[in-house]
Image (cartoon, rainbow over the protein chains, first blue to last red):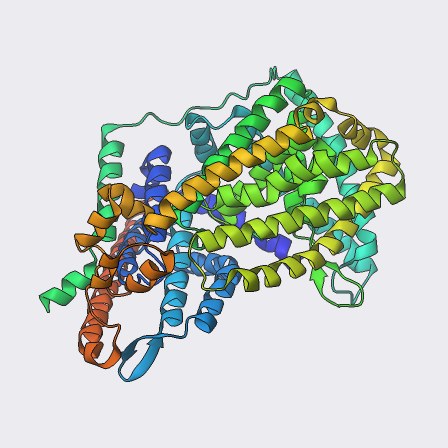
Length: 265
Length: 354
């Protein structure tokens, strides 16, 4: 139940953030998607013991997130979601890579500890990069951009409809679980044997609903295509910003800042 | 089972994105040609339903733990294989974008693990044939359990291969498999039973929904065993070839791409360490020698302790600078906001930056 409420809150708070008006918000969605991908590749390309280069990449979220007025707490919440599997892989590294890589103030540091830290930093950086994209781009501009990237119309349409109906169905699921729990107090979840009729009921309603939606779409002239308002055209300013951001990310990736500061000392 | 971005290397993520893109385009083209337009809103609504359904926890008898539905087989049974892939792709994309569950670069892996296996392989090859000669409750339950278990086993095994190929974990292959497969067997059994219960309920109320998809030849004909096997073989060659291209000569695809030649790239001092000169026979060797703080000799402990400490000082400075930059921007924008609020309560526009 609380999970459903959380999901609704996450979606609406992201919508709210995305409607802001800052420099990152005004950047063209296509440029933002490409910059995000470059950043992800830059973050994920260093190997598991290659920690120092990742430190420099912290500059990207550290600058863009406040510029876009995104609260930092949002990232930590999301990182927690992404953690379980990373944690599993990371901890097994600590167990399996026991060779000592270096000693730090007389404390031995193993390769496993280094790769664990690398993985955690990578998780954090990737999560914040995607958050930056989502929190500065209204969802329908994002989906319209996917169409521009030649992603099949049918898939984009499905994504758009899914996103629309998630709000509605989450609410319906919340109502149903609430009703169930009012009739079954002191019970942790829905009983497994009740799941068939529980979700089955929802599915049946969805079928009827989708038939009504289809009828409504037909009434408005649906011909298999879904026409959306195009995103604003790409401007020279967008291109310049995009090139600059990509350049900075690549510089941070290939010239290790910690090393630079170290040589200056 | 969602793989996050941090678990894949760009090479693995890129190859899998390409594979998934091929699959999605194939499914989209095929679905558009063969399916009724009426199904389009249904795909969206069903995908949203699966998303919401995954949030409902059910209690597993005896164990006291709780689980939630997965959805691949369920979507395929409701919509058919091809539209099922598209619907699950929509769910995965929204989860990756808005909930940090999965990732953008890992999206290809996730579509493959959770969409390809259940919708394009297990559904046409296991689920449909089992129910071809008439649907009964027992058959429906049996087919659901078997299909979900098989799809999850294949998906979990794919996770293992993708994670290992990315060089993320030091976990040996056998240990990883021994961990993943039994866990997903248990999950699969529970999920299979729940999927069966749901399908039985739906079949009782609206038999035509399931019958239409099971008797639907449009995907069935296209997905005959031979074609699937040939497709899988091609995918294996592409994936294997693509990955080994990156993995054998160079673990770091980006540097490789930037500098054209792996050895040259490394010799130019990108990743350091003399022992690299010996060759690149094994990925492990390279992984051991590429270092955490490049250009600092720290492998042999004590003698290197001094340089290492200074390296950490460098990292600390970088982090402090990044933090300070962010702090200043926050401070400035807050000040501006306060100022704007104080200036006039009538203006509702947010302060502009320029």
